[in-house]
Amino acid sequence: QAAKVAVNFVPTKADYQKVYNRIAESLDADDYDDGSYGPVVVRLAWHSSGTYDKASNTGGSNYATMRFAPEALHGANNGLNVAREHMEKIKKEFSWISYGDLWTLGGVAALQEMGGPKINWRPGRIDGEAKDVTPDGRLPDASQGAPHLRDIFGRMGFNDQEIVALSGAHALGRCHVDRSGFDGPWTFSPITLTNDYFRLLVDEKWIWRKWNGPKQYTDKTTGTLMMLPTDYVLTQDKSFKKWVKAYAADEELFFKDFAKAVSTLFELGVPLSQFVTSEPWQMQTLDEQKA
Ligand code: CCH
Image 1 (cartoon, rainbow, N blue to C red):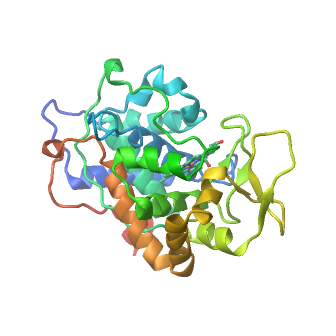
Image 2 (cartoon, helix red, strand yellow):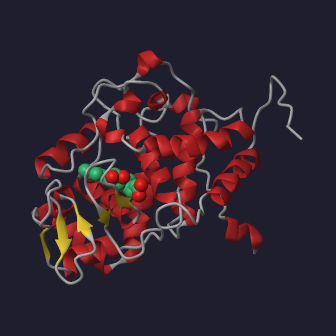
C-alpha cells in the first residue's frame, strides 16, 4: 500500500530511521562487486559533499547537484550512476526526503552497517537546481601528490589530520577500470570498515604495478591489493605520515576521528538554519534494533 503523504507532512527522527533501515537492508547483493553496494553508496555521499568551496560557499551536499549534467558527467563521478540509481529505489518509497539528505544518510547507513563508527547526521538539505552545479575539478585527482590533497581538502576546510582520517574510507570498496581507470581493492576486507588501510600502508612494501593502466601501486607480498598515488603519498609526507601511523596503531582513534570528519564532510554547504535540529542525531544500526 503506497503511503499517502500529507502536504504538510513533517518527518520525525523515526521517519528518517525508517529510511535508514530501508537503505541498510538494500546494501547486500550477491551479484555486485564484493557483495555490497555499501562502498559505492559511501562514494556517492562523499562526492556530493566534497565539491564544497569555503571561499565562495558553493557546492557541498545541500543541493545534490550531481543529479544534473554536467556534474553527473564529471570524470571523477564515473560509475556513481550505479549508486544514484540504487538510491532512487529508496526515494520512490520515501518521496518526501530531499536528495541531499537521502544520499548523505545513505553514506551514514553504509558506513555504520559495514562495521564503522556511529556518525552524527541530521536532516535539512534541500533540492537545488541545475544552475547550482559546481565546476569540474573540485574533487581530488588520484595521480597527484601532497600539495594537491592540501589544496582540494583545504578548500573544503580540512586540515592534515582530517585528510588522513577521511582517506581511511579506502579500507572500503575497490577501483574499477571502466570507472576511474584504476584497478583493485585497497584491503582484504573491502566491505568492512577497519583501520587496515593504514596498517597496510605502514606494514606492506608497495611497488609500482607493471601494467598498461594509470600509475598505481601494488603490494609486494600478494600483488592483489592497490594504492593510488594519493594514498601512498600519505606515507611520504611527514605531517600526513604521523597520522597514518597513529591510525594504524589505534583503530579506536581512527574511528573517532573518522566519524567526526565524515559528519563535517556530509554537512558541507548546508546553512545551519536549514537543519531541523541543533542536536546531533545518531541513527541505530539494524543490529541495534534487533537487540
Ligand atoms: Fe576515494 N576513490 N578518493 N575516497 N573512494 C575511489 C573509490 C572510493 C580518491 C580516488 C578514488 C576519498 C578520497 C579519495 C571512496 C571513499 C572516499 C576511486 C575508484 C578513486 C580513483 C573509483 C572507481 O574506479 O570505482 C582520491 C584521489 C581521494 C583523495 O583523497 C574519501 C575522502 C572518501 C570517503 C570519505 C570509496 C568508499 C570508494 C570505493 C567505491 C567503490 O565503488 O567500491
